[in-house]
Image 1: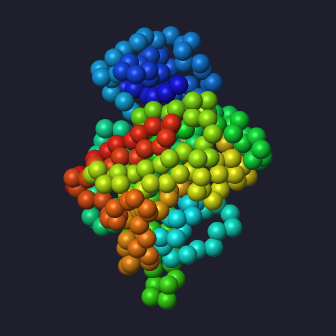
Image 2: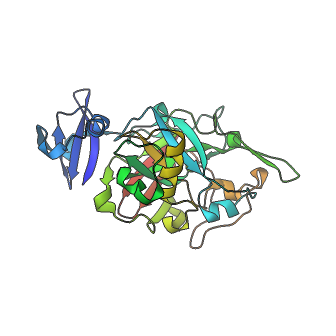
Image 3: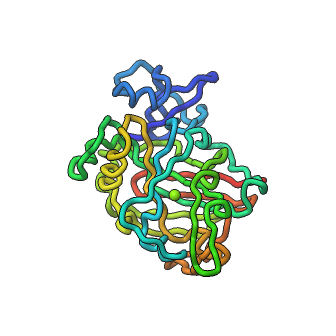
Length: 291
Ligand code: MG
């Protein structure tokens, strides 16, 4: 099942999307449906044409949990770091853009706006100190996510090869988190350990990988994060991006110039670009870049 949040008459409602139509419920957004474990197909509502509806981001959690440095080839495209446990950081929920809003490049925020296509995990069941062996029982579904990054604010690279990372300003600016309009339920996605993941920028293939190349898989990441924070329904966990980012082609920031097989050499985003992030069985996210 594919689930969304739609805006009708200025109010936000949870909806079930099937083909070119949607069952618009009277539940105020998918976040509320998850928090109260509401079965949307049993909720009051009506079928509408999808084309007549305005889609909002499916979820608007207060923060987005993020893993980083979680694909082997993303580690290889820049100065090496030691990885013994997942990198973890937060993005403010207010960074989540509506699906139709373009991302605005503000040059005093960043000169190096970079894309990061990621598998987003949507938590459906509360939990703390969850074992990897039953972590997937806490997953409601999955969503395609793009963790837009001000690379020049994230990375300080010194001539001796030392890299310092800053994940506050580099990850938190208006519109810096993109979610596909629909969450796909876990039963429909099935096993997430080998899903094809691609990014196209203005039609050029830039990232082409599989979730099989994650260092820490979905279950391990859920378990790790739940050691720190209680998982709540509606939490979104971003699982990191593979190689093929603009960073990899940027020697000023330690990029090693590696281009993933079959891809075009990457560059940072520019006004006029269209970004398409796609993950097998999960969905597709598209947005425009403007100045
Ligand atoms: Mg990321």
